[in-house]
Length: 66
Image 1 (cartoon, one colour):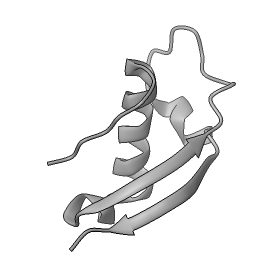
Image 2: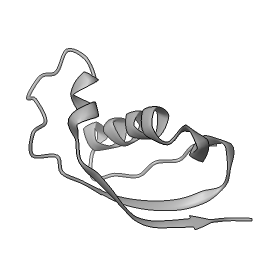
Image 3: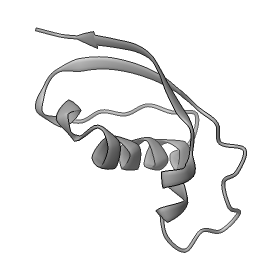
């Protein structure tokens, strides 16, 4: 199960895209991860999610759950 929580729907969609493209190993293990993203450059009406590749993401906490 992949559960993501954000302040809004668009932020959650962006976070899931980041997980899928930058951190695919997280999908195969249990972990609690907190990140900070700079979302100042989100287009108003994006046609694709390609803009997500340019979003700066800082991982603040990565706690493995065994």
